Image (tube, rainbow, N blue to C red; front, top):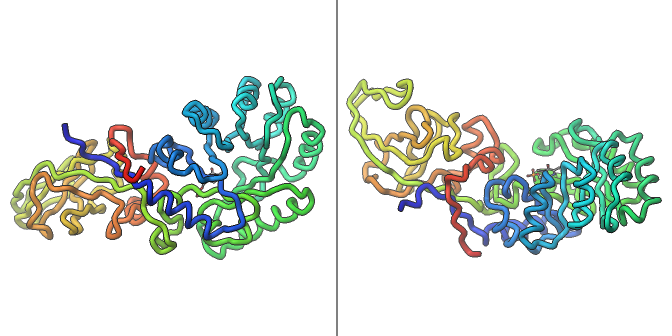
Length: 362
Ligand SMILES: *Cc1c(COP(=O)(O)O)cnc(C)c1O
């Protein structure tokens, strides 16, 4: 049975990237963000490789439970928080670390009969992102309420999230930092603010805890920098193979809608990767792949299972050749994401379950 296409996940690269994170922020604790199946890399294997993290973070309650049920006993932060009484009870039972980002979640907690105090709750503050966050004027009052309830929670922390940290020297980042700095001084609570981009570019945001996601997987959050530029190694290499070749005549159209026409005789190849594997259809006619170290352009539309490529610059290419889809120095996922009009986060998390993950250096 063919293993193609598959995603080769280099767990040594993942560990290397965690070390790089610590070099950027040597005085902060690291909450490794492994939401969305560890950005498409496979959460269980990634969590095993990142046990040196001081904590893990996920978006949803169900993701946190999955980790506990697989025996991970690190602190696990839940960014979206806990929205029912039952979830609060389970949160205490499983020793999870929720985020409170709205008053209503707090009211449910005050009603829940939890079995033991939660070790820590993060209060997500509104500092400029306008997504999830408590209004500043409510924060002090919530802290007062919770500090009286040592039966419910032992420690509190302040969290906030940057809206523009991928833009260097953007004044809005400093505005958000100023708001946080003031609240940190007023309350004296530990602070967790920096995501990957801020870890790399805004040292003043490091504080007590940092929350790296993308950079752990070796990709850069900046449009004009690759992961390699900041000392990171790509963790995922997406690999497939050439399943057919064909000689085209001038005038032949390729694929659905005939979106590419040969202007001369051309040898074309068919690669087994498509949008059903998570390969973006926006790469139709503009993406490229690597065959025998050569860049080979995509011609025509991306289909569900295949893409067609122009083999003119790679005459040695043969059926069954391996094809690198992304994750090589010459073909970084950041570059491809930019071509597709999106970000590496989306390409990585969109790799579908049909693509087997193979783990190296586990
Ligand atoms: C996903 C997420 C992160 C990680 O962001 P990266 O840019 O991948 O480092 C950090 N904090 C919150 C709240 C998130 O949702």
